Structures are given as C-alpha cells and as structure tokens.
Amino acid sequence: MTMVTTQIATERITVDGLSIRYADSRTPGPDVLLLNPWPESLYAFEPIWAHLAREDHLVAVDLPGFGQSDSRADLMSPQAMAEFVVQLLDALQLDQVHLVAPDIGTSAALFAASAHPDRFHTVVVGSGAASIPFELGEPLASWVTAPNVDEYEHTDGRRIVAGTVERLTPAYPVPGPIRADYLESYSGRRFADSMRYVRAYPADLPVLRDLLPTIQTPVRIISGSRDTAVPSTNGHFLDDRLPSSTHDVVDSGHFVWEEASAIYSSLLTDWWRRH
Image (cartoon, rainbow, N blue to C red; front, side, top):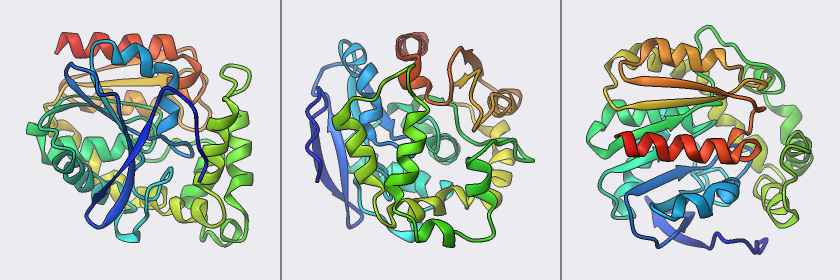
C-alpha cells in the first residue's frame, strides 16, 4: 500500500463488514464529513485541509469501492451509498454534520439528505452528474452509457487514472505521493469495478430528480466553468429544483477542490457560517 506523507493522516474503521479508510483532523469545531471524488481519493482534499481544519473538525472518507476502501457490489449506486453514508456517521459517532460531497458524492449526498435530513446541517455538492436527460462529456458519458465494461476490465486502471489526473496540470500539479495513491487505488480491475457506481446513474438519477423539491437542507452547488466532463448545466439543474440552494460557477475545470482550492475552501466556510 502506498505510504503518503502529507498533512492528512489516514486510519481505518470497519463499517458493515468493510474496511474503510478515513482521516480525522482531530481539531475542535463543527463536524464536517468529506466524501472522496473519483477517480481520486480522500487525498484530493489535501489543498484545502489545513485551511478548513483551523476552525472545523474534518473527517474525510474513501467510500466503499473508491480510494483504498473495501468494495461491495451492492453498494455501488448512489441510493445504496447514501444509506452507507448514514451508517458511516453512526460508526464515526458523528451526529449532525456539514457534508461535502463533490463529483460522485453529489447524488449520494442528496439521496442521504432526502432520507435523513436530521443528520446534515448543510450539503455542498457539484461536479457530479444530475441532469435528466444526461448532459455529460467524455470520458464520463462513455463510462456511464457503454453497453458493457469489457474494455476496462482488461485494462489496468492505473493507465486510465493517470490520463485523468494529467488533466489537472498545470492548474494543480498533483504531488507525487498523492498521484501514486490515486493510481494504486484503482489498479488492476479496481477502476472497472468502481464504474458500476456511475453506471447506476440511468436508474438512480431520475429518482433523485423527483426527490429534489423535497430536500429542505441548505445545499451549495459548486461547478467549474471549464468542466468538460460534467458541465455546469448539471449544477443549474439542481439549483432550479432544490428549495434551499445556491449555485457558484468557478473559473476551473472539473477538479474545483484542487484547481481552485482557495476559492473552494472559502465557499465552504462561508456556507457553514451562514447556516
């Protein structure tokens, strides 16, 4: 397993029989749960970690099947993952949190807020598929809609992740140890297995669309204006349907939390202080 030397120190906890990797800032303040983006890991929050930990208690998590947490096929959909997030809160002894869930976490976070509104002070999402019909660019569109994943099952996932991570440069040159963690997290068949989650979008996102008007939790949506994989129209789709939301479009590509980390962290703290 890759040893990553950063300000984020990881631990492991068993939840529903799965070994889950997480990091805890051990700092005082309101509880914040951060869910990993894909195809990255909880180390994606390295650029914003120190700033946020000044006044808040941070817990970052690799969800099942992502990063270096165990996987289980029945959890690889937004609706199922939403219920796991609540189990995770219980295991970590977190009552009510500010939830930060970019990218693949977007749909799971909104399902969780719909079903368990008492567990979330606020939710921050964005850079995640939401629109029905789909408004996705490549390569995500193909990953979601391809007839099968045979091509990816026979490709070492590190090759796919390497190409994706390169899109961050030069806006955010990923530190070597963190890049190595991303690649190891999806090595071999791990990437193809993680694709099951986004391939559940055709079934789950129409259900989420119908639930959006019922979600009363304050939601901040943060999109990248230059995001070609998940265009900002997905953020507008959410903002138009959520009763208590705001949508910020930042001058960034897909990985806003890394590419525009100063703006991203300021938007988070502003949202939490407002609520």
